[in-house]
Amino acid sequence: MPPVLDALDALRDRLPDDLKDLRLNAQAVLSGENLAPGQALGTALAAARFLRCAPLATALEEDLRASLGGEAAAVVSDANAAAGLMAMNTVYFRFRHMVAHGREGKESYASRPARLRMGRMAQPATSKLDFELMSLGCAALAGCEACIQSHEASLLHLGASEEACHDAVRIAAVMSGVACGLDLVARS
Image (cartoon, rainbow, N blue to C red; front, side, top):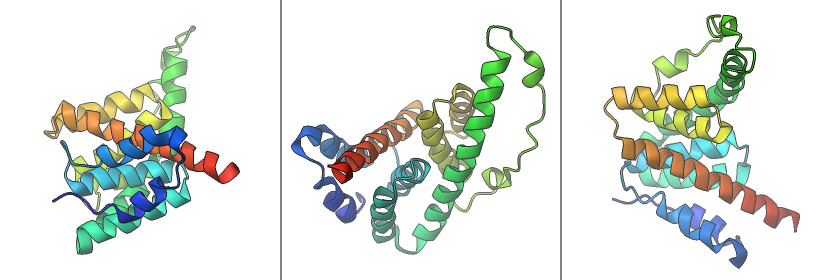
């Protein structure tokens, strides 16, 4: 069954004709090609939270609750946790990767322990696979090569297809475009 997207549809309708592609993409990427509705909406919500776009996050959470009923609380909880943890991790691991593989190649950074608490990643409210999809979307938004590679490899190890990974990143990319569009509308 496709997800309920009433709140997102109302938000999409606020985007001007200049952003028609975003309106269409926002609906298309959540149609469940390779992800279950909870995975698609959870990834979208994590992306909206990561982007700090409150109107988009509110609409997605409303649609998630309408689509999943009692199962929604766990997805919302994981989306919030993934967004917050990835906001931290993408800064740290992008720095470590860039310095270790930069011009001077300071490999000593790559071997240092992060010493950052990330227990929720190991014990999500939904499933490890679903949390990893949310994390991959956030990693792509941050452009953290190390995080993208790590989460994609973890997803494949957990049995996800490359198509599912691709869809998670497509969802995050479209949410980034919609967030930008909503900001443009708010400023005009």
